[in-house]
Length: 267
Image 1 (cartoon, rainbow, N blue to C red):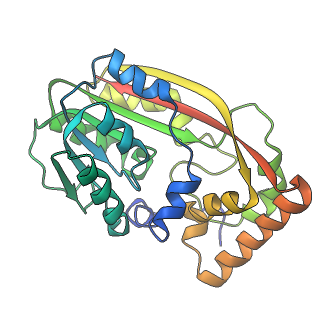
Image 2: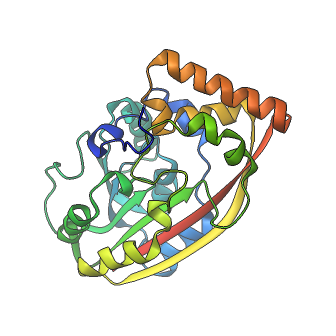
Image 3: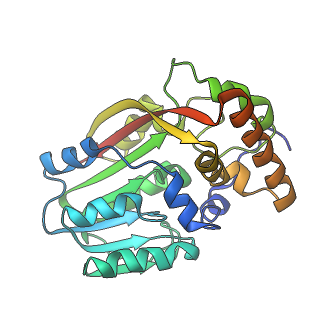
């Protein structure tokens, strides 16, 4: 496969639900400071009419519910995540609507939300189209929070990434960026310029940290990456086998991945 090939946005949105529980177990939680900042900036209180774009298994949704996101509307194009989202929202007794469509195509009334959230999801949406749509959906004075966990810290050595680059180099890449390119979420100047062009003011924050994985959890994580998830089953198993061998033989089954968490708070 041509390594320069990018996964189409409309296809990539439906690559993550093949094993929803494994996806939920392997992806790291978002740092508490992100939610603290939403509360401190009065973007989120109890109650706050909230729309979340691409919640997946609900990693961010849980905290939004706890902090008062109600009524809550979730737009998740991969229907395999719906049982998890339904249990999550019903268990919390939150007035909710779950829409299984793309964000661009969903039938949601303008000026309906005080907060729009995208957690490691907005790179699957055309930025210009998505920001205009967010602008339409927000009530006057409403805010949008777009945040990510990116498995990279710019300028910091990443031994496992280096050790596996040959295995992964032939895979197609998501709009979040190829391994040797600036990640979508960390391309701060471009993201801020797009938001300003859509009429928003932007407040940017980030933190760097690391997440430790044993081999089993690491393979669950990589199996959820779009470039691997889209492979035919035989090829996918082979790639994951090679990653497992590298983790065990070169890292003794203990891998540390760098993470940058970043937040664009738009108002």
